[in-house]
Length: 149
Image 1 (cartoon, rainbow, N blue to C red):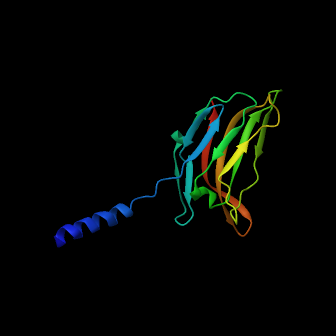
Image 2: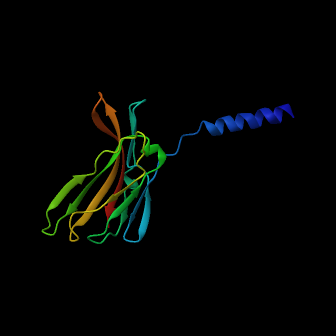
Image 3: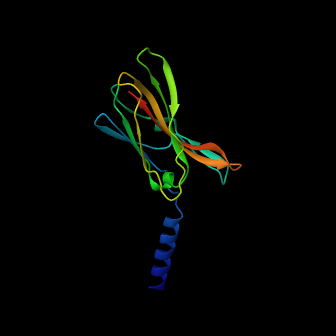
């Protein structure tokens, strides 16, 4: 009996030591949703980054439709923001970004990306998890990327 309990305790301890799954971001647009794994995810404690080129997700988003973005607690507890690019009605590429959401009394779990004109066509949107270094400089430590199909 003691041996069985010791084996079960060891199994639970080993199960608890497994790698923490990478956080996922959900993108909603034009009646569809997709979950994204991080394309790049860095660990500042070990100064290592993992990259997954296959993590970029896509949705078919018509011009003028907003993109709703939902992040999990693990991202909302850190500074984060959204960067994006779109084509305006003249076909000119425009790059933009949201404000940086810094956790405090209120954590930001979602963001709605609305382009300025109904004729604008989103090219991509990326959630950036950020770390603040040297007191004020935001440095990206993770990217979750949506491209327009």
